[in-house]
Image (tube, rainbow, N blue to C red; front, side):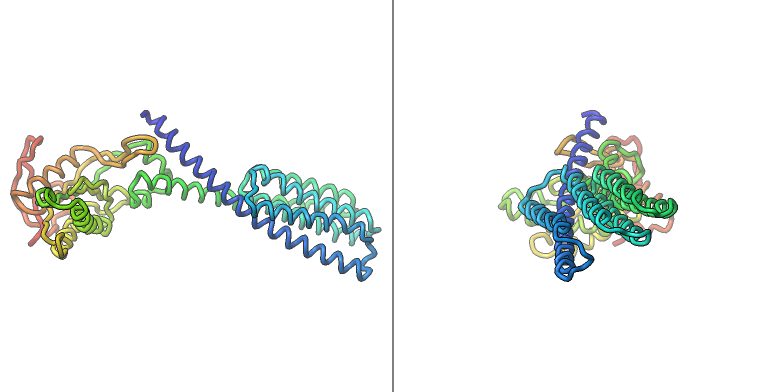
Length: 408
């Protein structure tokens, strides 16, 4: 598959996962908004009933009906959401209903009372507060369309009532600036949430294809790991469990798998402990890479991992304790990227560095359990604390390669 096709395949899957996650979160948020809406409406209804029974400010019962009616609507909305009724358009329609209720209730208040300038200013402040809540609810729905709709509806709502007052233009302007600021802050917070969701979904999606340690070290553009191979200098460690194939020939497969899990688990733990990435398991072999995910002294990490592997093997008991491991370590240039496409992909490293490490591991049968190439030793520096073994002629190389091993 071409790079463009690969990017499209993975990109489409990530985009679909992001949209599904955002929709699920918006649905949960809509449920929370519905709960707050119902509680607020019950509170307003009880307040209206108390005012009506006490004579209050002289408002007849008929002027309370919009509040009571919307309380019933709020209950219906909450019950519907709790029963699984949800559609993306609700993120636009429901805030418009809220804005409509604020309009009706405020219009009745403005129309019924003979208010002076101060009282009209207080009523207008109440409208501004209701408009602010509508704006925030739009952002809470994690939808740009919802936020734009609630912002436009709230500003229109405010202006409608502002023009009915006798306040100075400067006071209108202050309220409008506050509403615009609330909209801007809400948009910023919504954007942060959506970016965080996209990043996490991309990480979870790609974790099915890529080593977790590699994903943890790359944050800016994880999809680029899939689509664009990287050329870099790193250290490769290849291991092989000595005598495992012969031992496994006449054993029950479950017993073989159990022993393999114990040994490979110990080796993989050593890799992770020293900041490496297990690229793959190859039966009783393992390929690990150091220097992929972060800027570290990869040659030293690899050698220390080899030392830890040797100690871990010596400490194993039971059936696993009978095995020994051959380890080849080599440093050089390689290419890291993904093979495959769609739902079946594999992260891997390619290049002569990998081949050389593999051939060094093969040479451990005759020379020493751990063989470390001259390139890795050069990367370590003069104070490496290793024991020279001599030169080895590896298949595919014209010149012999000087190698070292761990101190006994």
